Length: 404
Ligand code: GLN
Image (cartoon, rainbow, N blue to C red; front, top):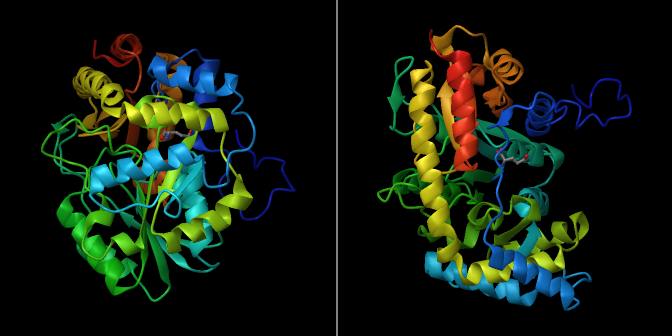
């Protein structure tokens, strides 16, 4: 399945991609009525007061185009939040752009700052849009591979995924224009340490490179000793960092597609130069709903984090019991596993059977690498679901994969 088959008019630039993995797997999951632990979206709604605020905005006629950069109330709320979280100054008029999810903010930033042929560094495994955004802008993605911690087949480890310092240093060349960092990281749940970010900062400064930080999972950290560090707060980085985030993950409204880019005025001007022609502006009533969410953010986030942590703790031991190596995540929506001890084929074959025969959907992670072979033994399970959905998935996994 994929757009490429029989699509002779498809542009060359899009040919290598086919249909994205989330669309493919969710379609297959629906077809087989599988419990969907693949695509990262909650199967529940976020807080009612956020919905109420959006409905009210719709009722009182906030239904026309929003200003290109976002409604002033939301830009103010985002600027205040950014300052609260980072201690950095942020001007709501010149430093904030509201985008159609973080998903639009990434290409808007790359297109706004990079020329065709420029190199953009990213870590793999990556959330697929990070790479496609780079390619669609005519730039060249340069991947630095995150390595899983050592673990025997069927073991669980909470040690972090790491990257090779020399590999990162070598990735920076005279052509590097930007680097994309995603912390907390999808799909591994890695929270980049201050030390790792320090190295990234050193290299960005040395090579005059812009950092594009996708921080959409910043509120979903389960371990107190792993705080989210915003790269912009490191010395010399505020002026060269574009910090991206969104309301979808923190408030469980991924379908609202409200994200934002925060950066100093000079960089924001570049982001807006692209954003004005990509989507121009973002759904007005949903921006007002997001204002309400940001005003009561802690109240929304606390229970969500508790629920996600409990789901993670429920699912991880079961995956391990079934023979997977479990990379216990400190954050996010997902558990990364390695299936090489299970003798059930590669990631794609494994997931296909999992959906068709076991009735559970997951994501084959070869889709998250520049060289798919690197992810052939990795499978990602989402736990951002109702506890009963996770339990239903567990029952099917045990029935279908359990050792009899
Ligand atoms: N971020 C979600 C995930 O990683 C998917 C978003 C999408 O479907 N593009 O599963």
